[in-house]
Image (cartoon, rainbow, N blue to C red; front, side, top):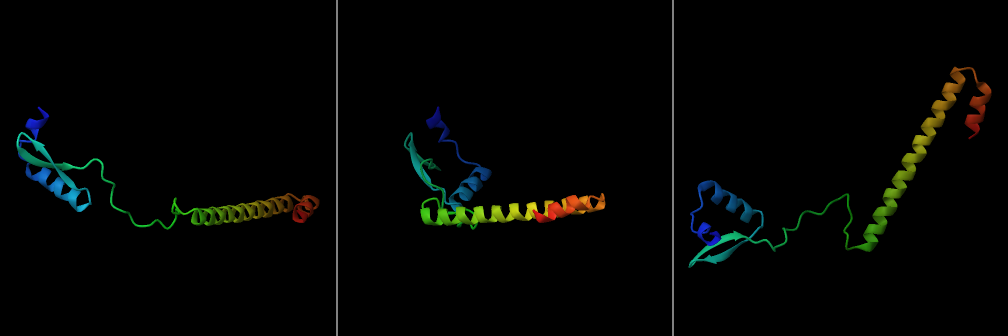
Length: 110
């Protein structure tokens, strides 16, 4: 039955789909069926190369990956330090607002 399916002509939407696949880089390979050749998408072909990502390093370049990891870690440390400083500043303001000047002074010392 599968071979007989290949004998059914493609309609306009199927031909458009086939053209779109070919334009996307998915090649068609002929499959012989009962003496007639039809084209089907190749299941074993890799997709076309995509554009290089600016946010993710090349997995095959260890130096690039190590540099990327270092940069991400640096950004995380900076963000943590900024968040901690903002939290400490809020704690000082809250202590001062509640009249706890001694506590506010201790918080400032940290």
